[in-house]
Length: 290
Image (cartoon, rainbow, N blue to C red):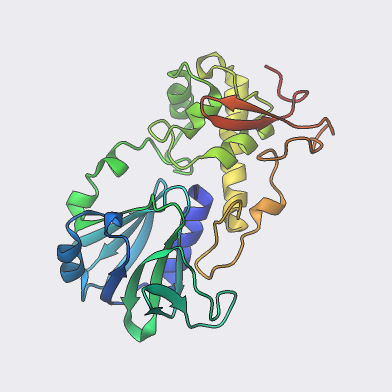
């Protein structure tokens, strides 16, 4: 799933590429993507609205539109947004721009927002878990996708005291606690592993047993690693790509995630994999003792 750095990369790209553009039409071959309103209402009411700004709220991409409307897209497990010039042929979306997607059919594109100047925002989603919601700005911002979120992991107003209070209130593992969007928003599987490796904390430690010094290390590593990942435009682990369809660079410097059997980047001990609930967790048995 795209996490905070990947979503921020998408949002920054969208603001640079499509801000100010009008939406002229919409296409989908998977109506269930639209959670609210109905597809026909969505297609009718979104036409002609201008993209005034795009924001990231947790892992959500929120388009602030003209006429006080808003569009929320959650990319979920395998979704990603791309910008280009596109056409639909024989029920499939086909790129007609130059670049890595030139003249290639992407069978996983299930939604297209047609803009002015032949630009289009395409939503590719292999597993069809992505969510789209549209309506009045106030209604969209009251959706559970947003109101259930904890403070953003990179919110400048998030103090160590508040971070510590939220983590210590949980009895489950620190790995799952960091990934709990109601505790801290934006962190997923990849960055939870790397943050805990950086802080030298075992992923199965109970969150309410983490010492203050360790929590401080987790807090600082969260900021440091997420900022680095944003500079590198996120991690193309799996099928994630940026809005140009290009792979991103954080995967080349990844610290722990999916490094099972590879030498720890600190002590050279082979990395291990364990389970935290239903999720995998990757760690160094020497640097991160349980």
